[in-house]
Length: 482
Image (tube, rainbow, N blue to C red; front, side, top):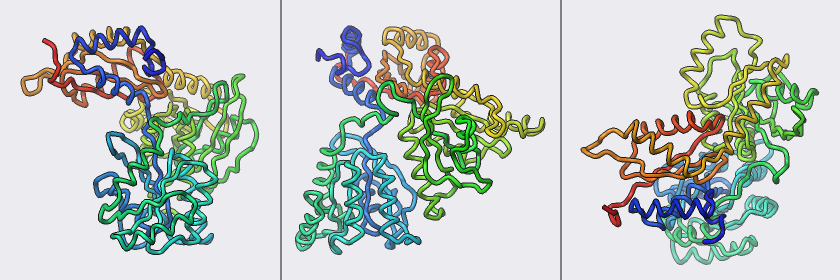
């Protein structure tokens, strides 16, 4: 392993020193390498399950994830929201996105399914295209095939509802779709799903490409997100110094993300204005449903999420859901409290109390109080974005990290549980964008202690504006040295 890149975020000398430390503590070398590699990969590969309504996508998703979570009902259109689950097969983890079809709209069923597939495909590393083998290839299936070809993503074709040998011939007719071998499966009974998942793993990358922005030196990508009518389009117009986006009092005017190259502070940024995320996605009309998918896709392509909060309203569950979406996506985050100029003293007082109680999960995110309408404090937006990006890309050398961990363990040991006191033995930062750490321990670390470690990491090294991912590997009893 002479190539430095094989060690994730570690250089050659640092890697050698680290592995010697691991061996001294009784860790298996392959286990340590695997933990660093897994954490360094960051986001899991994404498999989008697409197809027309009622072909058994959700039932197949339940088979893949090994539990009954996706909503299944014997009528088309039950799954409306794009739902993500984590799955594992043959020791590899990946994400499964269950897209589902839904009822006909004014554009017709083909268009609705094709549009839904398009947004799911955009954020995926590979696609599982599900066709009902008992019906055969329909015009709608053909439309989805054209979309898949245009997208250029790897595709696995599942011929569903093949419950026995007699259905094999039905599956074979799906060669006509031109997507390669159809894999005959029964999502209801589990028949053939092993072979199907083996093929899925062959199509999925070991680690997904970083989908953050463009090539090195290109403009950094910023997604403006928030619930409808919080002022995302007004903010974009203000930073651009011109009306580039339709602004209307009617919530939800924006349907498509609009990419804008804008110069601020002598730097060119790429702003993505997204349609507002509405409550209860499963009750949305077609256009709003697609808007929420576009928003998710915009976050996927961004490096920084600027989350707008309407200060004239109470901070809502919907605001928190949007924040969670951004945090879980691993993007750098800035919170912009908009319409600040419209607040009286009383509302300002109550808003500060709401921020204290409702925004606990992002106390580390830079905050700016702005007015998209008047331009108040807009000059503070770029420094906040730059701070968040710097935190997102911060790397702590392994030696410094372990000295810091040693101090923490000595001053604040883990509570004794069941007569044992687990200890952090050593750790490393496996990656950035966002920062990802692997801690190797003598026993299970409780969630509260992990949060304490994260808090101390932030106090010591900054990490303003970025989520931090911490994974813990516990030393096995075998091979332990006295």
